[in-house]
Amino acid sequence: MAEEELLKSVYDSLLAINSDKTTSAVKECLNNNISASTVMKTLADAMIEVGERFNQRKFFLPQVVLAAGIMEKSNKMLIDALDVSEAKCAGKVIIGTIEGDIHDLGKNIVAVMLKTAGMEVIDLGKDVPVKKYLEAAKENKADIVACSALMSTTMPYLRDVVELRNSMGCEEQFKIMVGGAPVSQGYADQIGADAYAEDAMDAVRVAQKLIAKA
Ligand code: B12
Image 1 (tube, rainbow, N blue to C red):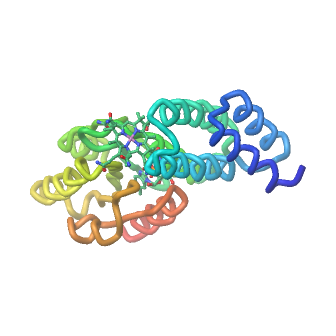
Image 2 (cartoon, rainbow, N blue to C red):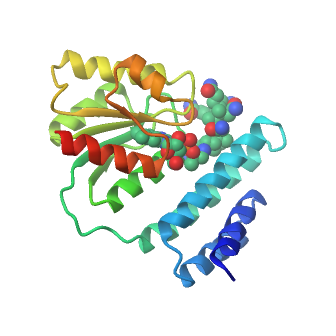
């Protein structure tokens, strides 16, 4: 089967909320030497479509929960197959999903991609208090604090991270990168974040740029 067809099978199986089919489609991709990051990107695209269908009331919460579980399981399989770059100490990143928010699928993909690019990533998990990001950044002498927000109700806490960092006088020590579906470049500019990235691949490019500038 051609690469395109194999990836389509991953996409379709996740949208069919079929765990067994998704798992075997993912294995099939790896057996055919399709890179783990390409398969992850396909799963992320499918999950975004799950979100669209949820918005259109074609899917309901139980389907979203099941799809999220399948994606997590598939990503675990893929992490082992990722080609981790030899480049060590390409920078240190503190990452987490912001206070009040438990959406972590996208954040987890970003964390994996940054690690793959050779960065040291300290993942604080989800529902991370504003203060905790900055404590961890200080303690670990991080280069970047990466914050994910998936809800309009939790986005304002991103501004709090920037303001707390500034009030600590640490603008030069650690740069703040924000992301998540409702976040945009405009919003990042508005709250004074140093960078925004649209997806995991973009996050790697943006993080590398931030580190190169430091
Ligand atoms: C899956 C999902 C869930 C799962 C989460 C599972 C998990 N472990 O994450 C479950 C079912 C648990 C869930 C729960 C809830 N959810 Co929900 N959920 C979604 C859904 C359908 C998809 C999100 C997702 O995983 N997308 C796929 C990933 C791959 O994409 P992503 O997260 O956007 O990440 C990519 C980029 O954004 C970027 N990125 C992400 N983070 C970062 C960080 C940085 C630093 C950078 C640079 C880039 C970056 O890179 C990623 C990879 O490319 C969205 C719908 C949507 N359109 O987003 C609703 C959605 C986010 N949920 C919503 C809601 C309301 C809830 C609940 C409150 C529901 C409820 N009534 O209980 C709870 C939340 C409780 C809480 N306190 O957080 C709303 C939010 C509305 C709002 N206020 O803005 C949405 C928009 C659905 C809707 N239309 O109503 N949800």
